[in-house]
Image 1: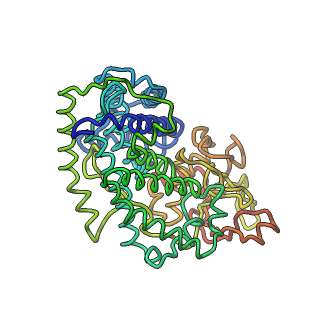
Image 2 (image 1 turned 180 degrees about the vertical axis):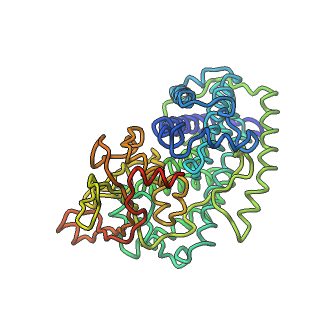
Image 3 (image 1 turned 90 degrees about the horizontal axis):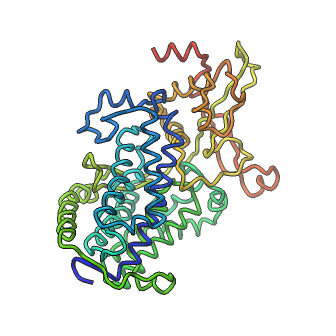
Length: 480
């Protein structure tokens, strides 16, 4: 290895770029399947309305040049095709300029989507994918020696991701400092998965061990990323294990998968060579012009790192902040606070034209978030269900639904097909209900005894009204 080319990282680059292609593929697929009812021309927060008040400088995006639902879908399909090409190895057969153009197109397309996605794309893993995808542009195809500086920039990204998350926890909720947060987190996290019930019922001692392991990884082990091999490799593998643990215990879209993929870029190529039947070409090129571009990239990242570093060192540290419109070097973090009580937004409908005390209300079921207490929490990640996630935030603070929640209820009153496709089931199928309402209910995991006796995964109690019963005429009046 030298300062500019590291042939020993050839397999590390291969594993990383193929993993990143998988994440891109999932992200573009999720965008394609969900955009019409959320941000489409007739969506809850339409992109055309957003573009009318956001300039190209405010939100760089190809959609300033042209918008239509068909054009957005075409961009998603282009992203899917390019991701599949990278995953299948086509990108590695391209000349260096072709490689850079392919990955640059993926980055530009997804940045364009994120920058017009509004609240539906306000998650840390969206920005993380944009930043990671930009670095991939400068890694080069199979016949080019991996650039040492870019491989180190991936370590720097992983460090900021993990250390920022560790700091936000220690500065945030007291339960992270007294080691009790995970006694609540598995139950109150945004979207539990099939194993979350079991993780919640671990002993208090094991919850303490979980928390200590999290702190050790994010606040201590993370510094090993900057050590020589094999120390850096061991540190990265610790992060791979912790991210795998998080994948097993909850649904966090592609956050854990992408973090794991970034960590795999740090693993020494000789370790991969021992298990993968793949060998690099005998001769690897390293064009001078490419080295110059990589040096410029490194200087750019160093300069832009001033804001994330200042944020990490600040007592007013913020989570998941972007400091440039292109989202190139960002701050990350999650769960600075942990909720103790789980509330869910339960949406109900009736065909009763005059709702009263005896009216029967029937529920809408969502694909990922808890609803029916007898339904086992599903495995959704690494796919991202944006509506389900936003409703978790609405249950914490109704302000998160300002501007779209009433419109969503209106779509249900219309039995709008794109909106209904976001759901698992509707009580009246494709028929319009007369009224809809939204209530908050308190949820908790059943105990082991309750689970054996009833078969239920959740116990729930009615909490309070969130949105009073509304007819289509009343929704239209609210909009005006």
